Amino acid sequence: PPCGKFSSLQEELYDLILQTNKECIKLCKPGTTIRQLNTYSTDMLCDGLMKMGILKSRRLYHQLNPTSIGHYLGMDVHDSSDVGYDRPLQPGFVITIEPGVYIPSSFNCPERFQGIGIRIEDEVLITETGYEVLTGSMPKEMKHIETLLNHHCHENATQSFASFSS
Image (cartoon, rainbow, N blue to C red; front, side):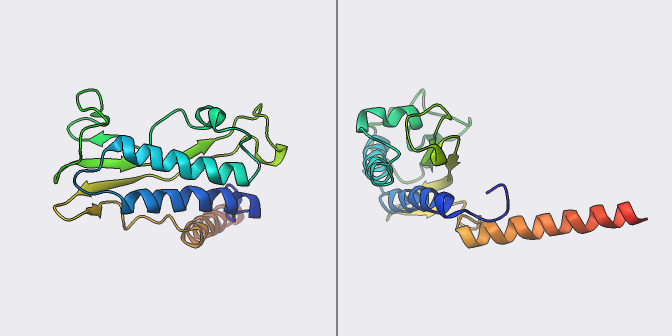
């Protein structure tokens, strides 16, 4: 949130993205495909966006997120071109789980949602028994993000004031 605190509107949308992120991560295991994860993510986001009044039809979802739930990681940032999304995940694969929505200012939805974009990304290692979130130590809960932003803003304000008053 640009002001260091989520508005109730931002909280609602962020929570939908965060829950989608967490639920998709739980599905990461050998045998699952990125296409299956993407279908689950799309269903979850469409349902939530429709309940919030942002999306009137599932057909319009890809105007808010033209990407997949994630992609393979390896020697290159995006290793998707060589490995299809229908290939079952195997131990040792590393993928991203990155649900998000980007609501254009011109999108036909309540004005208060227009111009908002949120994405939450994790890197996930597929293990023999499931997954390991490689980015698990990174903050993504709202309270942690607000704390970091407010601490950072407070430090910058203090430093700016100190240099100004010198």
